[in-house]
Image 1 (cartoon, rainbow, N blue to C red):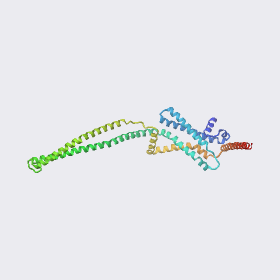
Image 2: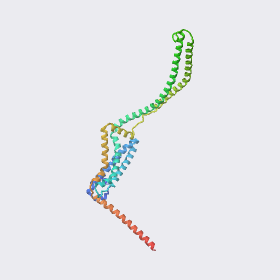
Image 3: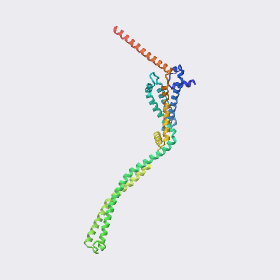
Length: 335
C-alpha cells in the first residue's frame, strides 16, 4: 500500500522526500497522481484502438498504444508538476494555469474520440455501409453524367444529319407526287397531258432527287462515323463502370465522419457524444482543478523554501565566482 501511494506521488510530479514530511498533503497528491495515471491508461487504450483501426495489427496497436499512453502520462505529469501555489489569490493562479487548462482540454478531446468510436461502433458500422453505398453510386453517377453529355452531343448531331436527309426525301416525294398528279390529270391543272406545267414540276422533282442523293452521299459517311464513335463511347463507359470496386470505407476518418452524421441525425447520440467528451475533459482537468482550489499547504511552503534555497545558493556561487574573477584581474593588472 505504501509503495502504491508513493507511485501515485511520483505520478503527480511531487517531491517524495518533501511530501513525506507533510502527511496532511499526502492524500491530495495521491489523488492527483491517480488521476494522472488513469488518464494515461485511458489514453493508452484509446490510442491502441485508434492504431488498430489504422494498421489492423494487434502488435503494432499495442506498441503504439503504450507509447501514446506514456506520452499523455508525461504531458499530464508535466502540467501538474509545473503548477505552483503562489501567494496572490485564486484568480492569478487561474490566469497562470490557463495555458495548461487549454492543453488539458485538447488532450482530453484527442483521447476521447477513439473511445467514442468504440462505444458507438455498431451504429457507426451501419452508417458506414450506407455511406459506402452512397460513394459507390456517386462514382457511377459521375461516370454516367460525363458520358451522357458526350453521347447526347453525338446523338444530336446524328439526328440533325438524318433529319436533313429525311426532309429532302419528303420534299422529293411531295414534288414527285405533284408531278404525277399533273400528268394523270388528278391535280394541278386537272388536264391529262404532259404539258409545260408537268415539265416544270417534273424538273423540280428531279432537282429534289439530286439534292437528296447529294445529301445522302454527304451525310451517310458522317452518320456512320458518329454512330461508330457513339458505340465506342458506350463500350468505354461500360468498361469504366466495370472497373469500379467497392473499396472498404472504414478508416479512422470515415468513422469520425459517420459519427458526425449520426450526431446530426440522432439527438440522443449527439448528447451522449458531448457528455463523453465532457467526462474526459473533467478527468483530464481534475489534477489542475484540484491544485487550483486546494489551499496552500505545508508541502507548498517546503517546496518554495527548497526552490528559494537553491536559487539563493546559485546566486551566492555566481557572486563568489565574479568576486574571484575580479580579484584575479586586479592582481594581473597590478603585477
